[in-house]
Length: 137
Length: 139
Image (tube, rainbow over all chains, first blue to last red; front, side, top):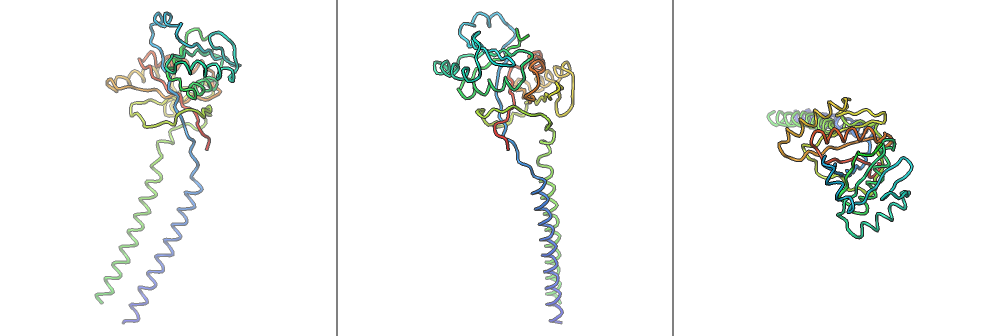
């Protein structure tokens, strides 16, 4: 009686462990294979100016106007590439980081260009970004 | 005899428990990122290495996807811009005065024209805070 009891507990314990390790490895390999790394995302905040364009026109002297074209940018009607834009915006940002950057974007330019500009603004710490659609054509 | 029954009972309980625990683990691992599956992975986001890492989620925010062929969609449901305006207006009313940011996930290659239409829909719905999603770091 005593011998039988020992044998039964021994086999039961070993069986359980093997099956569990099998299943655990299955799960481990399944999740290792099916898992894919996640990209780090960022959100670039912009504001849409309210519809009253009149007040916009009046205060335009204080703002930086940047226009995005498919092949470059203009800052206050001066054509620049992205490197010149960074240095120019950097100088302006040193004066006042809260000044408004009024961004216009032509219809034909890819969205990536706008993101590039927003990224530059984010790097320089400019926070008041407005994207307007008037005169974009 | 009594001792044997106790041991068997212990073994049986343990096996069932492990089974259930694994079931639970599988269930939670499979369901935890169900929400991520609603994201359209054909959209190739533009790189913005200097942007801030997106922080706490606003429960009222609306995610709008713009694919490279100019298709506007929310949670993989494509829709015309007029319908987007209606949905955004409803979202603003549902938020009862809370701020409703609109998250635009637009493909880097899509023309600004389409993105502008989406932004115009936001303006028409009375939403003025817009966030563009970009890629900070490729995995």
